Figure: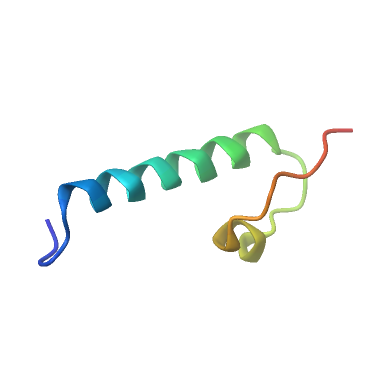
Length: 47
C-alpha cells in the first residue's frame, strides 16, 4: 500500500472507482465524458 495512506482512504478510493466503473457500464453507448467522471458529477438522465 502507498505510504501515508490509511485503510479507510484505500477503501473509499476503491468504492469511488467502483461507482465510476458502474456508471460507465450503465451509460455504455453514450459519449464518455472523462472530465465529468473525474469531477464526480451526477449521472446523465437515461433516455
